[in-house]
Length: 101
Image (cartoon, rainbow, N blue to C red; front, top):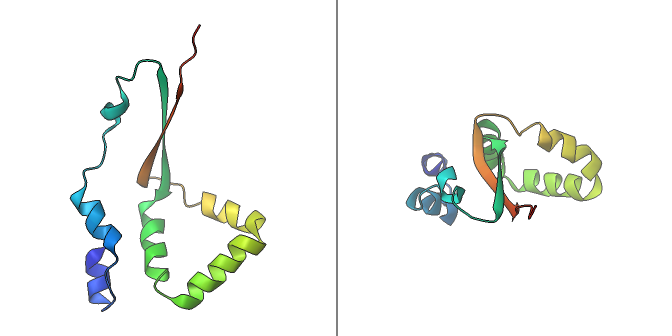
């Protein structure tokens, strides 16, 4: 991703560097948490994420997408949900108290 910004002669945001420096947590990080239930699910396909990042450098895209999200969330939600496909860009872990039965 960083190379794409450089190839486009755009300023590289801070986040790609942070992503490369920090290790991704493995599911095993959450495997031994007594009293907690862990749910894991994927979010946002890599392909969609790459496409979106490339569009976000264009002000008109950001402006139009922002307005659509504010004025027509009912339209945007199904479109965004279609972007939840494998391979995933991120994994989300949800921790909740385990049942005390």
